[in-house]
Amino acid sequence: MSEQTKKVTTATLRALKKSGRKIVMLTAYDYPTAKLLSDSGVDVILLGDSLGNVILGYESTLPVTMEEMLHHAKAVRRGIANAMFIVDMPFMSYQTGTRDALLNAARFIKEAGADAVKIEGDLYIDAIKAMADAGIPVMGHLGFTPQQVNQIGGYKVAGRERAEALRIAASAKKLQGAGVFSLVLEMVPSSLAKKITKALKVPVIGIGAGPFCDGQVLVVHDLVGLYPKPVPSFVKQYANLSKTFKEAVSSFMWDVHTGKFPDKEHSF
Image (tube, rainbow, N blue to C red; front, side):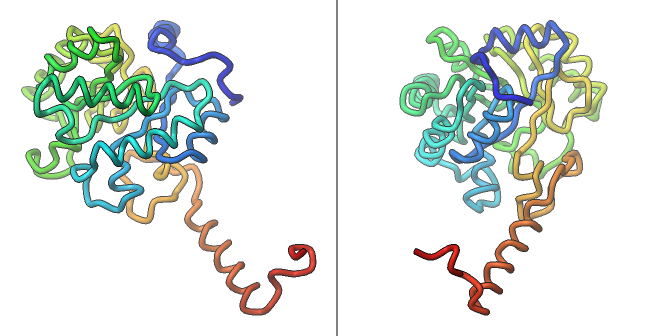
């Protein structure tokens, strides 16, 4: 797919839902990855707080700070032409009160050039409303919510039981009413994701939520096989760049050890 020729906005995503054309969202944590995704024509680029696991080597997203997210957001922004750029609000950047949430979200817009922010769960409706009123678009996130992993008790599918499924569906309506422009559903049964997607006017992006959502998102390092740990079962790997990377390094080491590099062509 060619590079986006027009800026992707919240209105673009609503139009895509209406038209039935699926939305493509992928994560980026640095300039070159963002540039490659932007040039490929991806609709939405997300700087996820998965930055903690994928780039910084943390065991979860919980240790990720505002300053770490801002640092990487600025780099990602430089690589994006027309894709929509969304940044995750890290743990404890919005849970401490509406004023804190609003000020921290504003930093991503003003300092890093983000187009929108993403917040997990439905407990911070006042913060979401305040952001929307201030002109900051907010993407919601329901189902499995990584920032609550310790409370949930691990990584597991959400909404298998009827009561939990009803709660998630009600939360989706609640978030739409609060002003979110879109919603991520993570690790929920396909049947539940289908019902929520049909019930909402805003676009629903799935990750481990089956084929019926308005679009799909994956962590790009999982997609291309560049993460050194096992990936979730819902991930389809389209390449194995870890293997290619190691082969390139081994070839370089061999050439250095044997004196084949640098040769005349690569010397001044």
